[in-house]
Length: 255
Image 1: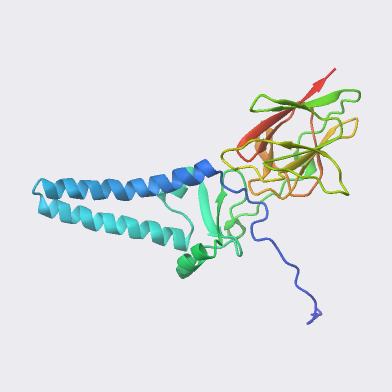
Image 2 (image 1 turned 45 degrees about the vertical axis):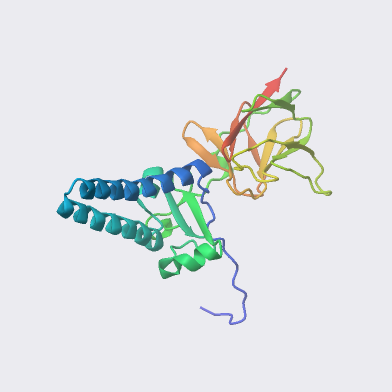
């Protein structure tokens, strides 16, 4: 085999195929971890106040050990009791690996990201089992609906007509070379990106493009949520339900 010493090495996104954890999942995981430590600490205080010094001492040691185990788990595997309960893992955005001893520097550089293991690839998965990246064949076949104008029904109750192209997000914009209408979707949880996804109607079917959003765009199917690859224009069936971050919308057709 011939090696080209000066051949450039292509950059690979270590988090490709992963699904960012939703804000509520991240908060719930942190709450569970904090609750474990606080409950043990409270029991220690109660035991000491009741004059049960030996039991109080044991509980103090248990509190310290539990806190240490949570920090070690986060550093070594990105998993803590809270992560296990919520099905998430925290890794370095730059490498897709755990931080090890560099936990504090990674926190300072904001290099940590939490992924949802139930909705996407586990960053540690290549060493365990291959991940089947979604492709168009895996998605339900798009059903042409010629002559009907799609309507986007948002989970907040609004209905938006999809005459041609529409960009959705917290504060969306459309580039000059790809004009589209924009819809600013109020999102207090900030799970939507500024320009999250682009929906297009070509007269026969609806196409969806995830615009590199932070929390991803998913097609809800009977088999679960199928993620869209970023910047890949993909057809969706009529009457489809899409998940954008924590928000949902449905594609409907009018006769």
